[in-house]
Length: 150
Length: 150
Image 1 (cartoon, rainbow over the protein chains, first blue to last red):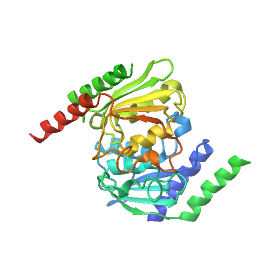
Image 2: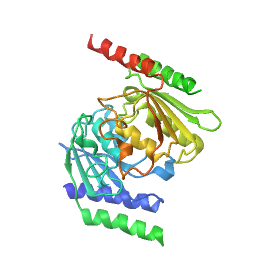
Image 3: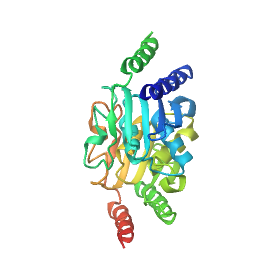
Image 4: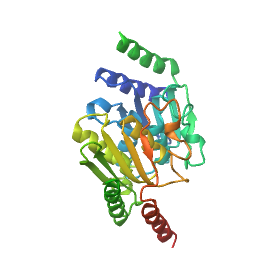
């Protein structure tokens, strides 16, 4: 089940890459019914919006669909460890569980750097599960950056 | 000059409060010409968008207007110390200078908690000036939360 959701997130990452974006993808799922509520890849370049990371886009889509600011029954799947912006947005949205694929020592904000969920000033910490389909998620990014350097 | 921009941000905060939002306001200014490029209050409840903090909204508006992801000539004025989400967005957008009003020991992410700009994983740190018109900015929020508790 979790793998299916991460596969959908990976598909979104692949589509993002084809559109000229850094390949990161996400989905938001109702944790009880298993229904996918929002699904997106990174769209920073397409939208000319520096905040249009996959996680922000699925949070905004899910909140709009459900008509509520807090997504307490929702789980978020994303192919890469969220940056501090996305980690804090996940906290604001009261996401129940965060599943991510590859760890991101260079820009991550969950297990690295700002470690957004690890401070008293963080008012909601989701359950966090890292390393879901890690090899697939990680290879997609490694291949992308290898091609960029050529 | 700086005070004028912060006054505009304060006006946006006041308008947000009238709309039933936590009163925080922001503007983005071209740091060279002094032109205001984007201006907004917090709109989380109105838009049912947990990411719709004033800073995120002005960054998105400015990037859309200028048609570019990086706002390297731009300065951001906001009445409250940004949270980690907004601090990281400011970094992604390559904002040149950040001016904020009140310090936020409970939820801030610049001088408190995650201290987003203080890590190697943060790839752009704006110049930061805190405490601009601090009393006005702080009183607005204090009054708001006092009324809430009544």
